[in-house]
Image (cartoon, rainbow, N blue to C red):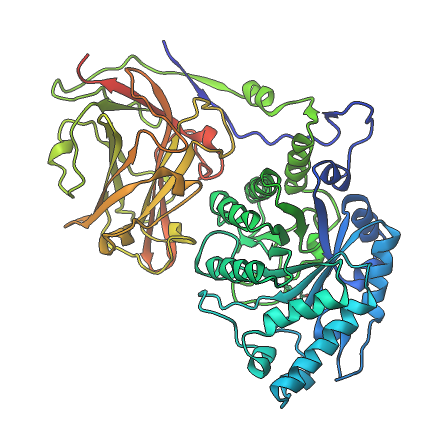
Length: 597
Ligand code: XIL
């Protein structure tokens, strides 16, 4: 009798549980960061220093400080030629007194533009002189004391199409960026000079343009030393694989890369499950940084939720006045995200947790008996599935990606019509099947859905808010793994592939590793997706053998109105809260069935 292990997601409070030789006290984030060779920072306003608890947590946990606003042009040079460094000086003094690195943010930005600059009628030469004066004065004042400068912030257009229009760009031209790097270098030849931006964390049009600009600077000897990735995320949008690829190519240019403004927001109320998801995403981001030697800092955009910039203002994404995007809550209590970060740093530093994750997971394992495989129809190529637990996938069989289901005729198909989100009169049903031949694993998703809604999102982000199907695989052999790693993939296949026969539009954790091919067609009752992944890729070697097991899961996302998911169907019974995207231990099993045996 086979046992099925439903490994519940376990969040382990590890504070105080690391067995560190000669280390009796709980290590701080900054100690552990140092042991990992990275800076661990936070953005701070001068007025935050009036709060003694803030000061206490900041100086205990962080070894890098970014002025949240104090270094920006409208603050330091409110009138042409009149500089005001009072607030900035206070932050610098605090950082120095507490042995913190200062991340100088930022010399040039299209926001916080002083009115003299906004309305300037300079010639190109006058503008270059004014920009040089600004940079020389600010960088020069703190020469030797500010280790890193964000020379230009957000200087590239969101769609990646070249340099953003800003006052300096208008007056000087696109080369204001390289001139700024040169001037900053002249003012402090020892400072590390960064280009910083948002929405360019993973590989996309914008990060491509930034990468090309940086590569060009490196080639021409323009003094640039790193790229800052802001990393303001919405829960669910962290794509660690894509981030890792981007970091990789930046590192290959000989540049540093830093996560400079990390926070993770979400639209609704705060729940335990949201805080756990947030912790997982913090962990993924930090782990991705630790995995690449070019990544030298992890900086959160604030210390505690009470001071987050995301509250109270509609910043163009959504207004959530109670959002808790940081590591410490409103009362400076460490949150699940804090413990996830602490644990990740401790592991990175080679400290052995006393309660290790596996042990704790094992304790919570529930064993479920799986009935012996049976076929209810002799023509069936494999036994019936066990609802929500096991899918028997026949091999070898012959399938073509042609939109026609004739070749799926004797392959067991499973119907899924329940999940975590269902509209009152739900009419959406997912029917899926999986099979293999010698070279590929094939998926069928035949979806009944009266209203198709797709094409409003890019595959890269928000894809799961519209009609889409997700297949998940864990090929590592460790079905209890509770975090994504190479060999574990979530492959979201959007219905938008119906109108996109070329490169498949996909999303999800590590989905880019899957090398999936997709054929999507509209049907009389909805849509149908046939897809296949190679049995051998860079990240896995799947060898179907009789009764061999993979971790497997299937989901469906449905939207009846654009941009607005109202249906979530889930196959694996272990996943009761739509958590498979961050916790692969909630998958069920796919068991191979040799049709020739
Ligand atoms: C924000 C500050 O957090 C706010 O308090 C201020 O009002 C506006 O600027 N990307 C950046 C930061 O690079 O400079 C921004 O900081 C947040 C987004």
